[in-house]
Length: 407
Ligand code: GDP
Ligand code: ZN
Image 1 (cartoon, rainbow, N blue to C red):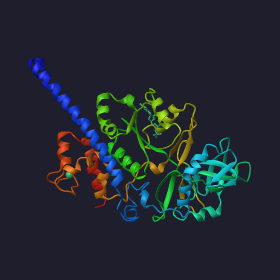
Image 2 (image 1 turned 60 degrees about the vertical axis):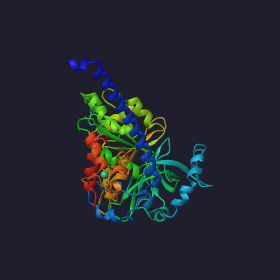
Image 3 (image 1 turned 180 degrees about the horizontal axis):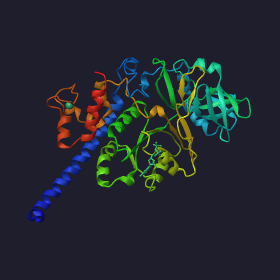
């Protein structure tokens, strides 16, 4: 008691706080520069496909691919070169006229909102057509098992009042793919043209699972997709300060963290703004409130619930890979069972730290250059964890993920 009233003690406290703030700021700068260095220097070293095969049956084996290593279809390079041109032309493109590079293709342009075995639902704006894919198009896409994915912009020819044929796929801005379930040496495109990943977690029911968030962040980084973290059911948080403290490491890493409640409406406007004018892929366990949040973002939204599945001719069970939901204000979200569990296969232990900028920032202080930051003597990361300079939860995730990766 007496101690707290002591003016000298107050000064000491003040100075301590000042120092802490100063250190925090210095660390923020360190992380920032480490992130930059990672982006500049880091080149994945692993051999193509090697670990996809090894890890094919692992729990996390979803959506795994190394962008710089992936197999591209023959025309993918050309598509990308056309990308900017199309992006510029896109807004001026009139309905009924499609552009691939310089040559206009007659037909309607539309957005693929669902793909199931051989049949695509294409949204033309005012109606949806069930479309087959032109045979030549399938053969052309040698690197992928599917020529057309949800999110693709396509040119279609109408063949009936509700049916058509996809003639061509317009250049893609991005590809989210994973090893094909049946043909592991091939890639399956899950979503085309995604702009960002929205990681949805609930604070409680189910309790927030930080390791999964960290895995999603790694997957986003590997897919070169910006990520935003949404923590829902915030109405169930009794201790708001604890919640903020838990999420602080992510804010320090530069991620935008949105706290929401589909029940109270908190954060919904912020979430709506984060989705605006983008194609967002949702990632999160079922039950965290993704559908509820979408309904809150856009009241009156008709959500098709449940996974659409069907039996193909050969009797093989297939499930719709992804469904695109158009929202107002040019937004769209993709919900996909293929993303419920992100996989990290192809990632090697020695490369893991590259996806933890907060750990990378400290690594130069380790005694050994090849320090894995586990039990090595003179490890600056372990010391930082003890002193609280690196978030214990992040270091815990690092160790957990490390041990789950192949040696
Ligand atoms: P999804 O599987 O991720 O689409 O989750 P749902 O939207 O179906 O929600 C799962 C359950 O959580 C439902 O019973 C919702 O009513 C409930 N829920 C969703 N959002 C919230 C929230 O913000 N607060 C609370 N307390 N419950 C929520
Ligand atoms: Zn170390």
